[in-house]
Every structure is written in C-alpha cells, then in structure tokens.
Image 1 (cartoon, rainbow, N blue to C red):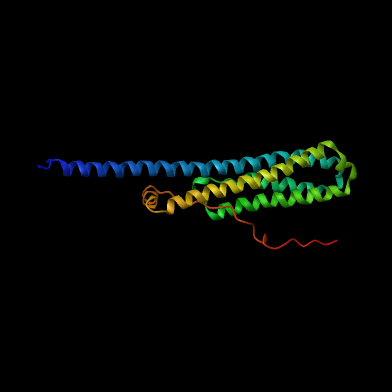
Image 2: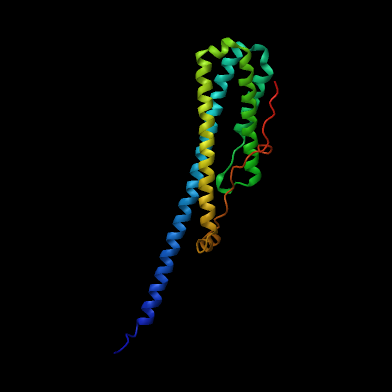
Amino acid sequence: MKKPKNLGWLIAGAVVLIILFWGVSGYNGLVGQDEAVDNKWANVETQYQRRSDLIPNLVSTVKGYAKHESETLEAVMAARSQATQVKIDPSNCTPQQLAQYQKAQGDVTTALGKLLAITENYPDLKANQNFLELQSQLEGTENRINVARKDFNDAAKEYNVAIRRFPKSILAGMFGFEKKNYFEAEAGAEKAPKIEF
C-alpha cells in the first residue's frame, strides 16, 4: 500500500489548525471573563452610587428634626463627597487604589452609622414616614452592596484562576491578561465591636 505524498503536510496542517482554534477560543474566553469582572465592578459602583444618592434626602429629613446635630450631618455629607471623588478603572486597578476606594466607602458607612444612631434621640423623627422609607432603602442598598462586592470577588476569582491555569496561562502571558484584585475586609474587621451601655 502506498502512502500519500502529502500525508505529512496534512497532519502538520491539522495540528496548526487545532492550535489556532485553541488559541482563538482560549483568548475569547479570557476576554469574556475579563469583561465579566468589569461588569461586576460596574454593579458595585452602581450600588455605592445608589447609596450616595439616598444620603442627601436622609440628611435633609434628619436636619429638620435634629438641628443641633449639624456636626454629624456635615460629616455624612463630607464622607459622601469624598467617596464620590474616588474613581477606579477596573481594568488596571491596583491594590492601593482598591483600598483607597474601600476606605472612602467605609467612611461613608461609619458616618451613616453615627447619623442613624442620633435618630434614637428623636422619637418624632423615628416615626416620620419619609425617614422610615429612606432608612429602609438605605438598609436594602447596604445589602445590595454586599452582594455586588461578593459577585465581583467571585468573578475576579474565576478570572484569576483561568489566567493562572495551564495552558491558558500561556495565552494570558502573551496577551497581557493580569490578575484582578479583590475587595478585602477592612483593617480591624476581625475584631468584634466593643459595646458599652
């Protein structure tokens, strides 16, 4: 039986096509995962923006009842202002930028906690329907923020695993896909808060 003359070329061509198909498919998969991480980051920012949009209404409502609490009200607005100025590009976010963003948002959370704590001194405010609705929306937003941050971390983990696993790590290195950073617990979060009566 005679061997075809071009069998070697056919095998080489098939191998090249398989490698090319793998490369294109792997690259497109990494692009999809990279975009998923960016999308999850946008969801995080959307929830923080929602919270930021609620703050002026909440402060205005409290201001009508608690005029002498101006220092707390100003602290909330200052924290909100600072947090809205911190912007991050998820495609090249450094751990320091993410920590700065997280700190600014944590400052808002702390200021809001103080604001909500002073409302305990104002029974009329606690009964105000507008305040109750804003407080409920704020609580819901905090829950959405936690979910969005978890979803972002999950997407970042999936992407990070993909770019580190062989053989996609070869493609990731060739095309500059870099590790994404995670949201991490704030410093001191491991300690239980001290409550005094």
